[in-house]
Image (cartoon, rainbow, N blue to C red; front, side, top):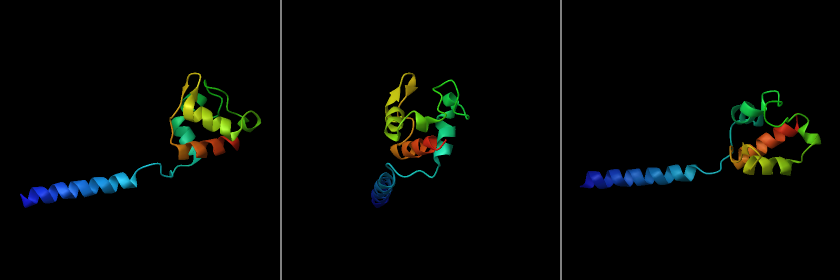
Length: 97
């Protein structure tokens, strides 16, 4: 009985620790890496894919507009593909292109 109680206690403590470690953490990927992994399938590595042309985006959109679209989606583009922290990195990277 003590072994089962000890095992259950250990599992509960481990679960609490793991939950505490999760959440909206900063990403270790760069904006470019996130874009290449999550966005380039439609927008292309050259930013001119079958999705909206994202070249010279700094002349067309503000960071707030980019964040809104990537968070909530627009047209056929789904929202929520990246975390809020990743969204910030991608928006900053796009505005530098």
